[in-house]
Image (cartoon, rainbow, N blue to C red; front, side, top):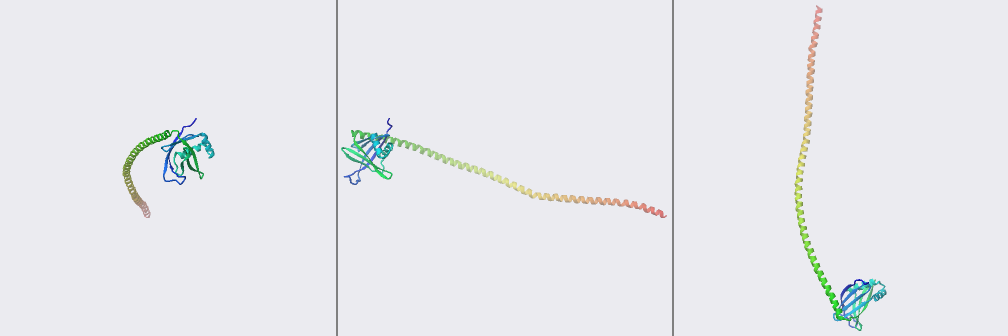
Length: 266
């Protein structure tokens, strides 16, 4: 069971030659449509007036791949690479091979060596139909590309509109953020200043208390000294009072003794 084909269409600019001399500045254009399968491919070529075809069967592709020591899949991929897009470093040719046949050639480098692949193309049994098929494929591809461009353009416009909305919203949020930060900063600054005022007030109170404490201690020490002096005075007065009381008693005791002595003398 064959796999699904892939399609390519390439416009080749082929330099015109005269008697195998150097290429002239003029060139001719050909269109190469490729239909690629896993182990074979089909080419349809037109210059706008005539058309040619190349049917590369699985046996031929397998034989060519073995000659180049390549797997069949690698050979198909490499051919599709160079016939799906014109490579500036590759030299393409579409020369006469006799009896209406054409030889399509292209060069490529492999491991530093420049190689050339050749495929012989036979005249199309219906050049008009082959050319029309190529033109239909190009028109369909152009329509698909145009639709894709329209879709991409619409998508770009929608993305651009969304980006503008996001940008406007971002600017709005940025302004709101700045206003919010300014408001919060103002409130915080007020609270901070209030706290600073309270801290200064408490500091002043503490300093006043510290200054008042030594004065109270001095007053208390003065009071203690005065009370001690008063007590000393009281003690002295009491002692003096006690001494004065003892003195009359001794005098009274001594008086009778003298009296008695006086009586005895009589």
